[in-house]
Image 1 (cartoon, rainbow, N blue to C red):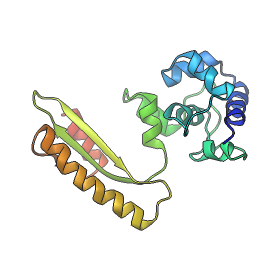
Image 2 (image 1 turned 180 degrees about the vertical axis):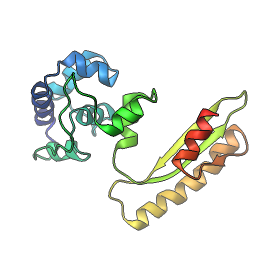
Image 3 (image 1 turned 90 degrees about the vertical axis):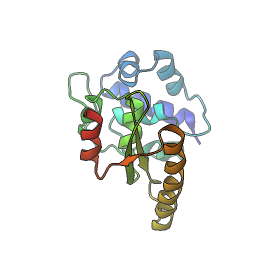
Image 4 (image 1 turned 135 degrees about the vertical axis):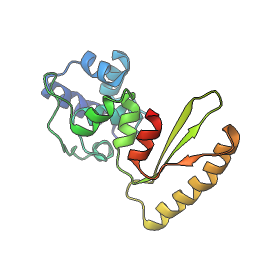
Amino acid sequence: MDWTALGQALRAARESAGLRQVDVAKRLDVGESTVQSIERGQQFNKPTRTIRAYAAELGWSSGAVERVLAGGEPIVEEAVHRPDLTPFEPTAALSDSGLPLRIVADLTDNGPLLDTVVISLPGGGQAVVVVKGKAGGSPQEIQEALEAWRRTQTHLVERFVGEARPAESEAEAEREIRS
């Protein structure tokens, strides 16, 4: 994995978009030194959520980080962001929800949505769980992930409240969150 090439590609894309490191840091809710480390090619075991969010801010497609690490070029799906432009649709919609950009990147990263559940917590709070399958997973891998979630859900619910209310759809999950 060529972390230096990834850092250089991110920097070039950022500069091409007219963004400063401080702009990216603010959008990602990280320190400027984090952006500097990524652009210098700091090595990691695997791409981090922050790196993926950075790439998403620049309009890179999911999988582009791995492509660059393997020696390829990033694929840009959306118009490159400029400070005076509204971010691309998924990020804008989720960012308006108040979610941290790292969570937005995870939610918009590819991989099928398997389930959502809203768990009422003692004291009136709620926990929202979004379960996604492996990006590019085979039907068998997706089925295994769903079965693993079902086992985990039972333990999770028992641990906190004893009963969960699975959401039938994203819209129902949103209604439950707002109520």
